[in-house]
Image 1 (cartoon, one colour):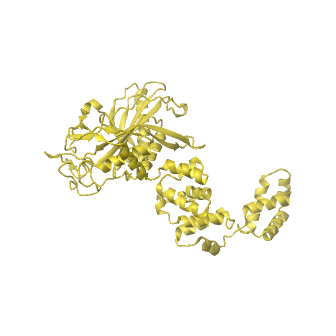
Image 2 (cartoon, one colour):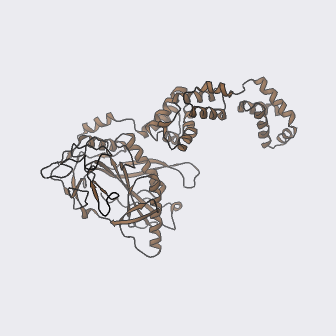
Image 3 (tube, rainbow, N blue to C red):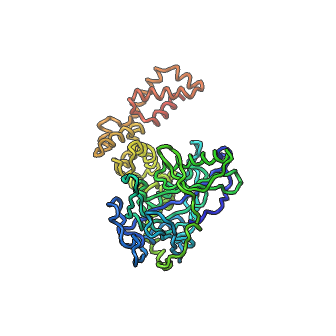
Length: 499
């Protein structure tokens, strides 16, 4: 990869740790969703028996030649278009030379001087560090995204004193996405990684399975005094969960600051994170571009991408999350924050839009999805695809809230019932549980009069200026109506009587 440029972003005093500014850049390997490898016809399916999906090209047998996978190129173009990058009309493949047991060629075919995707940015929202207040919109600049082949895999667990080599993964197409050092906290780094994960899975170029290694993140972490040159970075390799990502970066930040405070210099290195100990440990000294002895691959011609090809790919792409979020703001009157939250995945966006169109109450639908529905899914550690309630059922529930049939509290009871028995009907549950609000003004007025007569002290206190006394009266009225009174009607009638 190319070394990211000098960061120019000024230090935020609220983010300093012991007087040090944190600087983070990311390299992410997204495994592309092609059925075959980047330079051969061997399959890419995960989980096959070792060394059953590697052909002569992947094994670098004499006389074999690589042939470019068109699908991999189109997926790189899709990503570039999704993040506003420049698609290079002509890019070059190079040989990156290093010697690992699971790299049969002795080199990796990658891109160096001229990558296929150049520039661009990933935008996302970051919750405030204080835990309160509005989320802030952030943008992380991309340096590049280049195509390359994956190496094989070394297996240690099943071989006592030995290492097994599985070359099934050798030649699997990767898109390596490299950022500028724009991030200033582990929270910002994780928010960026989640947004990038959303983009590649949304457009379908990567399945995003971090446990299987389809989406692997490396974090380059350094610290410096505000205004100083960039510090020496250490690269945390192969972070395969967002939780471990934050833990690893936080530990590395503390470790580097303690080293500097004790008068020791930071040595550039590649490190691994151990989730059992919560610590990083050095794996090897970090190589630079010169160590890899890059040179153009003589077996591959330049990759030429005509403008017409880019436009064909653009025409076939799904609506991007940021475009859909803008449409949600325009069509449904949502805030920028709500629209972004409801486009975290294509499934959530589709669920929202189906329910909103069915009942014509997009704001209420969005609130219920981001609130009660999300809370229940989070407790079950599930996503929207596991939601037992259909968009049509949620739309019916929202309609019954809007037309005054049930209160919000009663709606939660309906939601609970539907969650347990999804085949149920909203209206049937309301009837069976007797959850209809009392909309009979005459009956409600009798209850209000009775409560006022029974609570002269609260009435006097309210009329003397104690606003809290009104809440006590409302509570008594709701109790008298067995929770079926419409709170808005109660407040209006009560204020009218007290006036």
